Length: 339
Figure 1 (cartoon, rainbow, N blue to C red):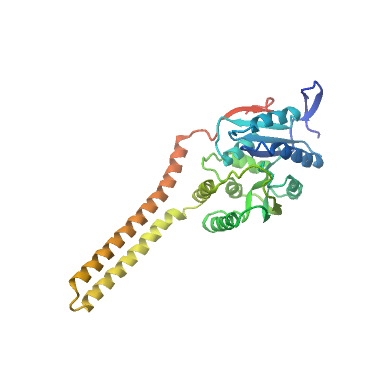
Figure 2: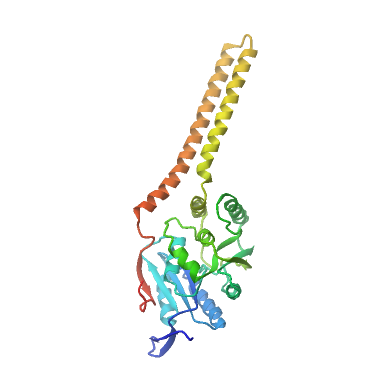
């Protein structure tokens, strides 16, 4: 059965027949990407038109401070299949993905960044695996061009660390670039936690999954939106969302410190017995030094784990406030829908 059609009037007065129920929805977060948006949409439309099924492109403006909102509006006017969701402020990359999937209507939803490091030309490969029955098809970064050795090493370490310490098997060397079936999107949309780690959630919900290797390109223009500070926060969100290990480490460290303290006490007792006539000055110096080091060590351990507990408590606090995940200032292209 052919999808229903709506009639859209373009700026020059002509009419265009647009499918009301797209097969594919592409969700792309946008933050200060004025230099790449036109090329991104041109390549994306070319790829999706070659597939020959109805589609929509949902651009989520995450509080951009450059000309991105203006360019997005122009792109929507030129092609109504390009739709726009404007946040009231910057809410973050993961919440921009969340908003895009909330608004997307396709039977399959493809999440991709708008910086063109993830080539749109890989999408047909993802769709092919979806047609074979897989409900989550994630893109695996076989090669990463234009990235520093530090970024590659830390990324490899993070992916392998989170795979070992979390209670979900998050695929190694994957980002948010993936295709998700409508069932998966609906399942994730029902999860409204604030500190979201979308690539972890897409694994946690289950369903049939497979990876597709691809070559990640270097950034063509602009600057990275994930400096070291944001990378560390992102890593913390991923770990605390799916692992209790940081909290459990406090218990493990307590047992270790208790065992070391007992051994130290025994060693001091034995040395005291072995020294028949110890020099008073030397004995006092070593006694004070050992006490000072022990106190500083225990104080440091306590502060570290108070910080870890604080991270988890802060996330609990964010959840109990029940604030909305994001606030939409306006949306273009969804006039025929109720959101």
